[in-house]
Length: 129
Image (cartoon, rainbow, N blue to C red; front, side, top):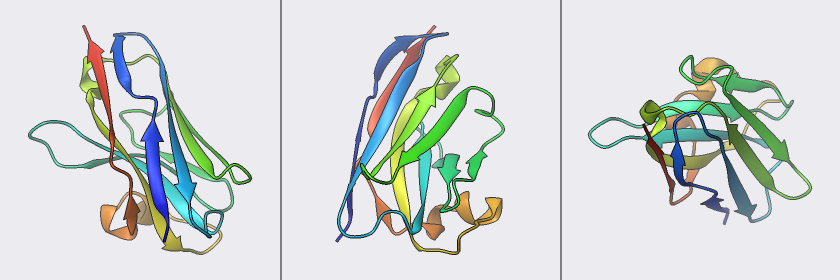
């Protein structure tokens, strides 16, 4: 059974950077979409970024140009580099893994929480103004 463990969250000032990492255990990793979602207090969980089997990357409009997702299949990790952070980025960030997917994913698929079957416990990111 796959488990996901996030790390790298913390408190940062506006304009600063953080790098989140997600380590996956279990037998499968490279055959799935890996995604990042976030949830702020009182709000629904929202899509942040994802990377598919081909290495194709996807971003929400709110983070495009500021965040970069990457995966290291050999190390079974996926990372999210977050730059130019603002207080609006404050949330719990979750790593998620889909079931085995096609080589190329679509934005509709990767941005839908129900596409993912395994979730990490979340890591808090707080951006102060």
